[in-house]
Length: 633
Image 1 (spheres, rainbow, N blue to C red):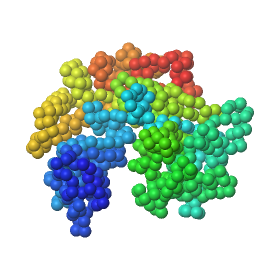
Image 2: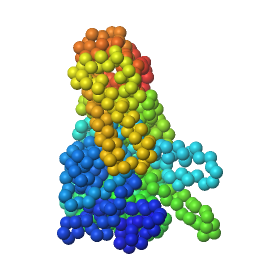
Image 3: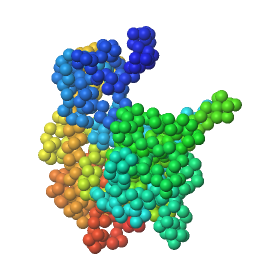
């Protein structure tokens, strides 16, 4: 039986207590206080129940912030820390302690839900056995492979298509720069003023962009004729796209940009856009939360007979469903994959119509079979695709190329390079994504938790090999490794056994003991992981120092420069080979990291006019590319 937190819905008092109870609520409501600072009367029952499970949606937005911690803390400081276990590590330990008289919400377990848990996975917050993945690719694979019986339950989920456009030189040059010397969308769409007085800083160039997406920019038309290229499909000129993009979302950098765009679209030269209802979902006047959604939905009273464009710089990018949206325009810099894909997948909501002809009540017509992401910073867009496909489902032994290839099978990527538009393959995506890399980003790649394996099986194999243990314990920081691994393995197996014995019916004392044991072994596991990552960060130093670029890194370590490797890392070649055989390092991820390092190094050497290895092969971690393959990538 579902109990909602609103007064107008079914209440706990009137609910049938003999049936399972599910309560839907929000932090704002449960954290709200009455006039004297206590719990709201209507929420007291929530605090009196020991819940079987508490589910947090949109976990990536930091459910465990100060106010949320207050809601789930226990009687004493120690229990407060135990209650949330290692989950607190994701945002640190600076939580509010709460009021002494604040009743806790107690629970037997937590389930964290997120469509974009990039930080949690990258930080190694959850180990393999705690993670269940169901990504966009899984959903589309299920849709494609459905063989019945009955109606395909995934049929209404539209396929996403990413279309990236390289801006013409005359537009791009006025807003290039930044970390990767890329086209800067925030600068290009920068605006000043408020409301009807808002105006773009580069209004003439933004007007050219509006002409471009309509396929009427004179400069590009001339270029296309000169080069003999087919005219690329632009959002508001290609008849197929124009028919689909009746309701779109434009994601801009600021409130001023949203109003400046609304003002520009209203100008006489943009009469084409006058048939679209322009919604400005930005600023205080647009309302807070779902209030900003009301005007948008009102403008779509008859979604099949109307057209709309919604302008926003943040509102309505998460937690809302607007079925008629079929396309999103990414018109701002977004480095965070969480924000990028939370916004992008707003347009993937299913849109269907029951009984479309009024004659068949059981018939369902799918109105949205495809939806579109339009991005005008190609390098940024393809970097996000790479992050999404490789990070959210990191399978053992799976190369980045294979991960990207599988993903873009279901989310095709079309790239316009200024002359023609083509569908790109996995190597194209990785090439464009890595071409704009920086030394800072390259270094961060070697700090990834994905480079090392710290699951129980790997740690057991490591602990059972005395030579490997002796090698690691000879390095500063690994002195207590043997004891740490023993505690991690024993405690984790002990907790698993206790959970199995109690079968979810543990006493408060048993629950407390389980939490204590879990916290201890998870904390130690994270420490071991961090130490191994710290070791991995020494490998790029070794690659800078060695001159054998044509060999695999393994061969350079074990055959060519073992003494240099020992000086840099503290491990002998035999120790290194032993750790590889025990699967301590993730070969697929290391291959990717070495490949990107050498691409960056190659570009730097070419820029300096140095090419000592012309025509030679290029080594990765444990594979080798010939020069032609490397150049093609």
